[in-house]
Image (cartoon, rainbow, N blue to C red):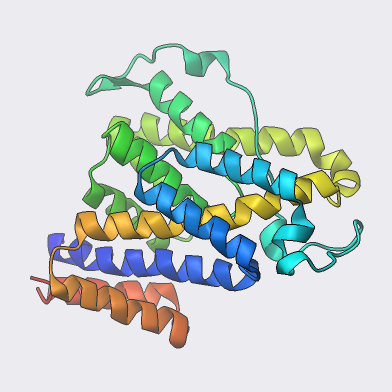
Length: 283
């Protein structure tokens, strides 16, 4: 089983890079967005706060405007037009329930349910759109800052989330279970999704009116390139932390080709990685 899990690591890194590639092909269509993505990548490699990077990128988007960032200043779509898929992401915010601010009863290694819930609630506040955005934010929070998970455990969590029918946000469930068992898994999952659910209840009746707002589109036009840069930096950091042989890098490179060039389904690529690990090819 250790060999199987070890074989999943390089494939997970390839999955992250392929997700960044797919997002970049749609979103990075001008040199300003490319520069913003590069700056976010450098910031991520320097281990700056992903939340701060996203906020700064959003402010830059508001300052420059979608028109300047998108397509080199060419006229953007009218306000009422549909936005491309990468721009239909919702800024999530919420509130802190009183029971998550208190110290929990169950603890593991000094971590309480309250601390666990509050940590994932903060992550949920900046959970923009697709699940891959979670990777750099959770890596910085759980691995670099808090040390709740080792780099290999973090990779294992991403692998498990890709092997299950659920979204990659199952990574939060895995981390919660790793810390405090079933109670931790439930707390982490609920806390992660609570801000988005709360905001959707508030805004659902106003969506048609605000979805074409220029300010929201300007803000997200800065967010999207920064998200891609943070995902790239997370993939690089994870590869440095978990790949320790040329076989691992070779498997990651082969997986990228299978995912991008031949568009093989991730589950099959993960299966190939698990088989390679079980056969001790990576040693």
